Every structure is written in C-alpha cells, then in structure tokens.
Image 1: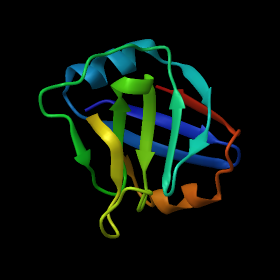
Image 2: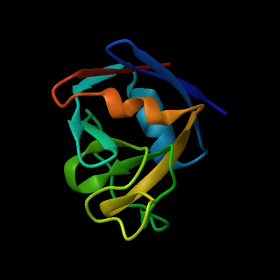
Image 3: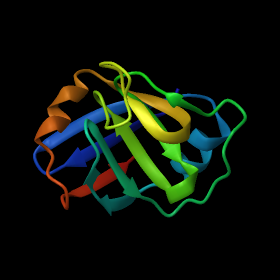
Image 4: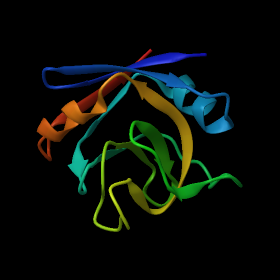
Length: 122
C-alpha cells in the first residue's frame, strides 16, 4: 500500500492509497499542489491529472475517503456532510473514483479556508 502526505497550512495528514488505476496515476504525478476549495465538509482542488470515471465510481462516500472527481480533474477529501448529503455522511456532487483514505482524524480539515495551498507528496 502506498502512502501520501497531504499538507495544508499547519495541518499534515497521511493517507493510504488503494490498488486502483486512479491511485496509481495520481501517485505517479506527485508531488503537486493546488488551491483549496471547500464545499460543505469537503476540501477539493484541481490536480494535473486527467482521468475517466471508473466503473465503480460513486457519489456516496465515507468520512476520510479520497476521491478523484473526473468532471473537474479534482482531488477531493471528504470529512463530513456536503450540500447534497442526505444525512451526516458525505456525498459528492457527482460520482468520484475512490483512490484512498486518510489515516487518522480528517475532521481537522474543518479549519481549512478556501484559497489555502494544499500540497501532496509521496
């Protein structure tokens, strides 16, 4: 299992990638950085990777999951409900390719302001 480090301002999180093609292609593109956008309890940012939606892509996600949003070439980190959630679980705007999960408490991302720089490295 490959690990990555996600850093936003004073916050540093590690995440474990799964064995998907999406995870492999994102890992190969590292390091990169982007400008954080927030959407409810989701932080997302554009990355220099363009991928198609995988057959198992889904909109209903779990807290801590990492998703790649093909519509916006975006890296998404889910940590709670979004504007389209039906309950307390996160829900993406449209299906995302799940490619990993944050290790530990992802709720610290509630502190991340829109416009912050997000860095992702191996």
